[in-house]
Length: 300
Ligand code: RIB
View 1 (cartoon, rainbow, N blue to C red):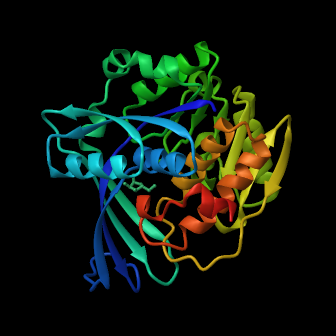
View 2 (cartoon, rainbow, N blue to C red):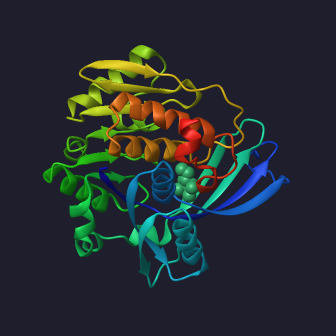
């Protein structure tokens, strides 16, 4: 089995479930509240591990209780985590509001220690990079670290998965070193600098990004499934009809399980189907890490 290295963020999520999202200037009463381990990097790492992959996670947390919570949750989920400690900044946090009726969310991330992960940290842990066959990164850590990790992976002929979330502009130089780019529609719009209102717009946006040199693009479209773009053509992979209660972490679940599928030598399409099943299960449960399914559940 191929080895995966996830380099990314670790946050603690403060989640309020509400009947209706508040309007500007409005105070509303929430229904329930929970504190969970999260962060796109940690979520993807757990999704990988639970799907049966051999995965290592490199991240930075603060010297605080939230950092300890993340350490124990990652351990409980069999993630080999190298959590570096930032002496100055606290562990990253996310304030999340989930609309109980639509299962949609609003998220604010304060990056804290995640923003202090450095190129030197990667260099100090270069063995983890060398040992890995697949490198996966997202955008809740500094962009220079993302660019560096992508370049290292490319130069060493590894599979590089870049989940461009939260949405941020990326250089063509970085994009051309990516094996799989996995934006959602909003992220693709920002990268392609255009709005997408039709299938034709989607194709134009994909062609634009592919022209920068990205080999494969997988656009996640929520309950409409996903689109794989490669060799100048689009292929739709549908999702499953489920009763969604919380979409937090569904994209992370998709990315983590997709990487796991690739590591188990699934074809690209089969890895996407595996990931689609997993994220369809994920949205039927509250929370992010808490909602990641096991390989047994996905297969079943
Ligand atoms: O993708 C969901 C994640 O985004 C949450 O866990 C939160 O921490 C933010 O990183």
